[in-house]
Image 1 (cartoon, helix red, strand yellow):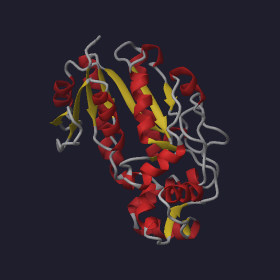
Image 2 (cartoon, one colour; image 1 turned 90 degrees about the vertical axis):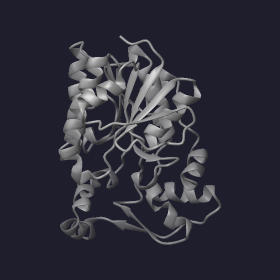
Image 3 (cartoon, helix red, strand yellow; image 1 turned 135 degrees about the horizontal axis):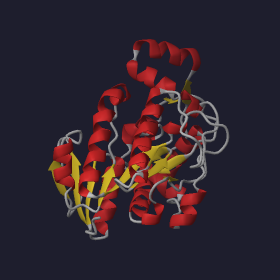
Length: 308
């Protein structure tokens, strides 16, 4: 068991940067590991070049760390089946070798299509390959945890909003065009309630879960604001910086099917269209009660999303 205040953050996307920032602000020793070794610009944070799928290299980087935060998120869905298995195996090996707590940034894909609120006790019953893959990543970590080989915990958020999300979020990816008053296109229906999660709240929950031994061995839902429709969420983001609503087109049905025929990425997105065709709402009651975390106020989330 490792009792140092050194932390290894693997990945420098919006969640990884938020985790590193919050750790640095509390005075922890933080290392961010990425394939490129690029500097996040966060004061006091060390940056190293590591291929996270290389278990030996990752284990060396994790030596002496109290926690390894898996904030990896391969952006190209078409590469997940190739990229994730060696990454997941390497991450598990590194935490088993070093004794670091394994704190995983998860998502809601493992549940698959659901009726009603998503709670942590739902089975991981995804039918698409991305959801099954993410479910297997957690199942393997949980099995190792229950066998006493590692200590693991996973936090799951909904669609990301907040600073630095950019193309990684269904709302933020259309914000630049919307700020110019242009018509934007959104996946699925734009009139269904949908949970949006601030990336900084993901980081707050991940840190709290990693640091609480009693919280390990299960998943937690990130405290998130009340659901909004996609249309409402974008309109709120625009209003936060004094901009009017814009015209929104819905990409669904035959139009989406036609695009999927010629675009591998659209085929991957089409597998997830169930998330936007009916209510898609998480229940964060457990994490709010256990950790005492409340989501960042929605107005603030909207301002930061608009100004990313």
